[in-house]
Length: 342
Image (cartoon, helix red, strand yellow):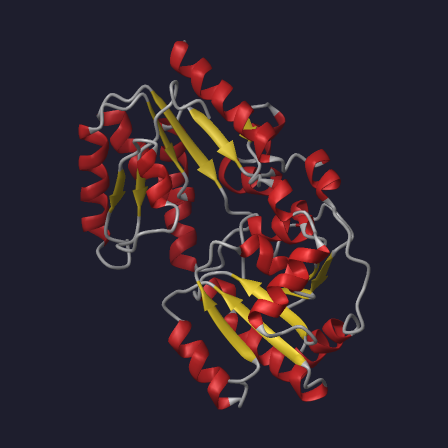
């Protein structure tokens, strides 16, 4: 976006600095780290309230699903005229207490926000309802990417595989935080079944999170230490996707996972749980499998591709489906400018 027109500040719900923070700070953005809700629910809300009250903002854009009510409410009380609530959840929770909170806060979120956004149709239905979608009250802003960065390139693939020492291996990968929704324990069970049948397999795990230690212990217990590589948080995910042969995402739930957009752009075959929205399927590279299927079933599906398949660029299809960030950025910039000038 034009940084002469728009300045962003960010509220981050963690103490850890992200790898992109120096870039945004160079753009004169302020980045506020607040306690997570798990760490201190009221500390989290108090910090957000103070930041918004003292920020003199024209727009507050909240991305917390139903919990966006709190920053949106604080923005209203602080006199912020333009308040955007953005839905990224593509499925309803089965947790009774969370469902109750959702039902209580939903009408208040709708009342205090004056612009309703969603990353896709399913996410729009969950938070705003089908009628709002049909009536054009919901703005669909897709989780777009810089698709050219993820374009498949055989030279990049060879370079990265050599760098990781996996030139001849059958490489399965996952990108995501080590948290409950991502279902890493089941992912390891699947890979264990793959490895039993095919010792040339290797698993790349990219990311960090609270459950990383638990997953490492599980890997050790299965005797998979030499076959599983924990790569941590990386800024070369675009190249790591090139190195993989299969992307594996057996999540318990997702919103609209950007990583599957990236994987498709990289021409990477992806096996994903059927909890993931079909909206993200822009190519024939995604295969949906039920979590009720056994790890052995998943493993057999994965091993169908151990002898390779045609890897070609799919960025044209992704662009046509609306996932080119250049196009979405222009839309977002235009929207911000229009609402601030009205």
